[in-house]
Amino acid sequence: MAMVDEPLYPIAVLIDELKNDDIQLRLNSIRRLSTIARALGEERTRKELIPFLSENSDDDDEVLLAMAEELGVFIPFVGGIEYAHVLLPPLESLCTVEETCVREKAVESLCKIGSQMKENDLVESFVPLVKRLAAGEWFAARVSACGIFHVAYQGCTDVLKTELRATYSQLCQDDMPMVRRAAASNLGKFATTVESTFLIAEIMTMFDDLTKDDQDSVRLLAVEGCAALGKLLEPQDCVARILPVIVNFSQDKSWRVRYMVANQLYELCEAVGPDCTRTDLVPAYVRLLRDNEAEVRIAAAGKVTKFCRLLNPELAIQHILPCVKELSSDSSQHVRSALASVIMGMAPILGKDSTIEHLLPIFLSLLKDEFPDVRLNIISKLDQVNQVIGIDLLSQSLLPAIVELAEDRHWRVRLAIIEYVPLLASQLGIGFFDDKLGALCMQWLQDKVYSIREAAANNLKRLAEEFGPEWAMQHLVPQVLDMVNNPHYLHRMMVLRAISLMAPVMGSEITCSKFLPVVVEASKDRVPNIKFNVAKLLQSLIPIVDQSVVDKTIRQCLVDLSEDPDVDVRYFANQALNSIDGTTAAQS
Image (cartoon, rainbow, N blue to C red; front, side, top):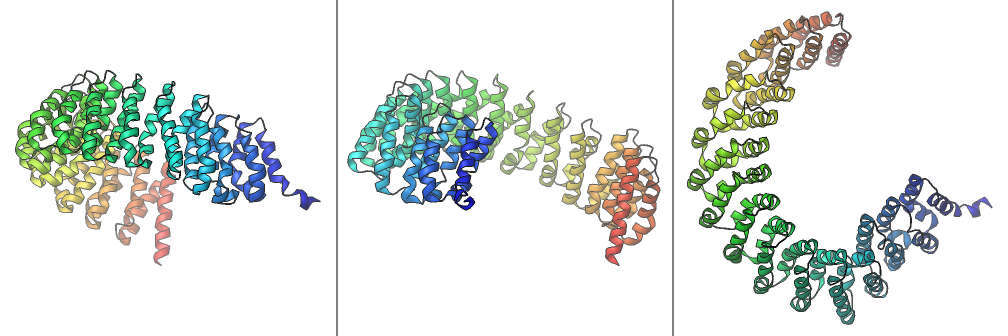
């Protein structure tokens, strides 16, 4: 008897858990649907499990979202593609719930299933579902319908295609703005499936209606459609139908629409082609760069380099550069920051002479901006300018400002400069580095902020790698070792940190002759933090130095530390001693 009842057990557990008051239990059971479906078998899944789920669409949103996701990959559990249609009813009911994320996941799952269905199943089951949703009384159903038209349309007869186009046109004129928004958002996807003969006659008519909508939330979604539709139309049709819309949108009364144009401008330019960009979209872009809303200027400023790539240098200098100069002193720090993040990319476009004449003064003013993010954005892209104007000019014009920023009151700016120093050093060469930046590298080791001190220690290691151990021995090591007598224990700790990073680069000889005596002396420091960092450092030096040095010097120092009154010092000293013993045992 137990054997007969056993197959009923999984569905019984599922039903019990789905009716449980505890949402977590209900959620867990939904996430185990595939396991339960395997236990039930394909036929019972179709006849029992799926109908049960169809009736269970009034649960918590979290449970419904999980159900919508699971059903999207459920085709193998109901018997394959020929039975895919049985999954449509529960997803259809999920397409009508109020919660947006549930509807969106249900639409996504329907698209997955519909794209795998056979043509006759698509016509018999999927298209009627689309029609029902599109005619639904509740706006949520009509919103969901907009997202699945492109799947339904592909496998239809001509009569059904005509009907679907007419239905979509009605959704574009729906009374509810949410439905019109969904129609505008999905028009590009639907248009890719529609035959080219109907693009101009019908799809562009729907598009025109959406671009004139009285709700700015609908119009701004139509902006995205401009780029998508522009790629589907012939060039002359694109210029005739899309270009005027873009120009009008760039002057729209709603700043959100203008913001969307500024954000999508590069894609829109690609859609209409280079000629129209130069003649018609340059004036529109200039208007957006000078917009009275800061958000629009931010979006436009962030696209300035990409836009200039579409123009010749003369046009960029004539029309775009005056706006860039204005934006570099914009009242909004976020506009200046957006400009600073991309302006360096204009140097290769304009060439050496124009960069020196027009861009360098702007770079300098942004490097001295009061807002740290603006300065950071300029610093991080300096190499792009160096490639164009050369190191001599860069060092004369920008480096004084960089040296000034090395002592900036905002630690993140100092950090950016430190991280840029090795690259700068490799570009400038040893001579320039010694003159201008060497002293700064030592100064950063004693900064008040730990992140700066740590970055400065890493910086020394990278410089030693760049210029070689001999140079480091002459210019870095003596200054670092001088700090070992600093009265502040944190600064003495940075000496140990610098040694640990530089020792592998400097090699065994310098480590033994210069670093090790300093480390051994530091083991007698009065501060426990210094002593246990000495123990950790000695452990890291074991692979670098000869075994004789380990036995003679390092072991004795660690034995002394292992008898220290401080528990942490003893712990790390013993760890290092164990490491030595392990190494010795491995070698023997």
